[in-house]
Length: 103
Image (cartoon, rainbow, N blue to C red; front, side, top):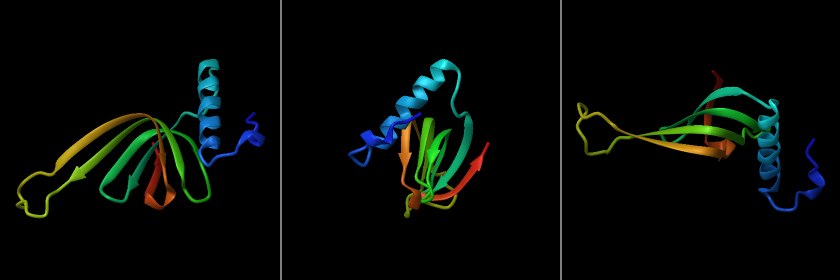
């Protein structure tokens, strides 16, 4: 159980949730919903959903971010540049989310 009375700053709640999830993971409990998230700006995320809210703000762990970059002056035949980043934890603001799917 999370004690929300200790929340004073905007990111205190995600920090509490992450620390709680880490304790649950070590004890065998916790969420294990793998999700795929399509975002604005040609970004895609896959990871384990920890928490979300009514605004679709989401917190993911073990997240892989894939960014597809295509230059405006490139030919149509040129393949886009794909950049992959790994994040142990990632907080995504809800207004960037286009689609969320459970894997």
